[in-house]
Length: 162
Image (cartoon, rainbow, N blue to C red; front, top):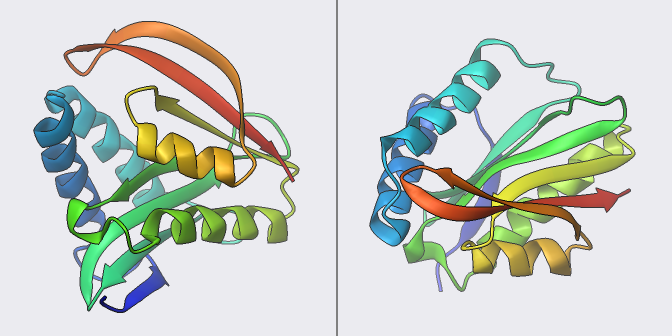
């Protein structure tokens, strides 16, 4: 087992890695097209250009010094609500508890920053992520079929009251 470290995003290359890793991984695992990578690029660019460090953070997981995961916590559209965004764990790091540690880090930050709830949007094909969210106390509050990223999917909204 290697050494896992969770650190704040901010080193040169972190932003680009998040976009690259999402694009490659979701294409390989689910056949998603470039529109997903473009969505991630917009999320990352918005964060990189204009985020409130007191209320918004992002983290990178490293395994033996190599980037293998990420998660973002940003302000939601409603007061008191944070959004968990773009959780990713590279296949090489699965089984090391990386996803759970990233979600726990995000939730702890949201609580410390004074948010009352955390929301997230995901798709039902992401079963491993769903298990992590449910174990952290999130509950499914809505789901709706949609066609995105070149695939027929079921979008899911989850919420955690802090």
